[in-house]
Length: 315
Image (cartoon, rainbow, N blue to C red; front, side, top):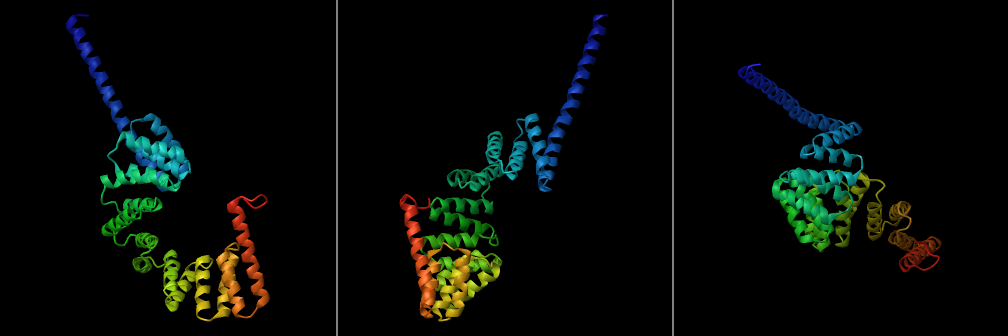
């Protein structure tokens, strides 16, 4: 072969090789995106086993893809494989630390295991990257509150409300934070706001009921506890609170009914048995009162035995 022809042949082979490489590269890029879309669709459809199998393979095939590691973490988390999910989300953060969602999902794993300090760090990074993420502010507030950092928690809940005034549960969490400070007036206001916007959520009713009862507002407390019972008929707090209100209003027969329901729901609750004993005492049912007072004594003794570690006591 003449040198000129040989050179042309080399160029032709090189051109074919480059074309082949380009052709192979395009499907690789397409397949990575296609895998992301397919795995996301499977997770959204609840096909978690299939999503997990595909995500494991995709993460091996594209080890530098933060998005695929994120999807792997999501599938693992939904399967309850928290340790692996945490590792996958951390890898996604390492590969692309500019995406707020990766920190958010990492925090969800830690929150599910009550690892509030770790979650607060991830959520702090999330809100720095995405300050308008109201849900992240709520979760950061919850993490702070569980770390007894009440003032920063309140600040985060207020930021969430400023961003999304109708976001469910924020007024409830803010009220709970105020209550832990002893600021019962502010707590009551927030609980009422949660009831207005999220009327089927049970928790604010009994918490607000306790505040009204403590203030001596028996009518308001009774209304709140009754609404709580209506929303959750097997809720101990509402039945117990309503029983206490009815004692205060002199409706002893109704109080007995509510308190008997309360001790049925929580047989080991000392306060409910004591309230029932007082009710029987006021009704001059001495044997019933004595029985309840005996139960109160036994529960106190059991509690002291557990706390002191006395041999033979329940541990």
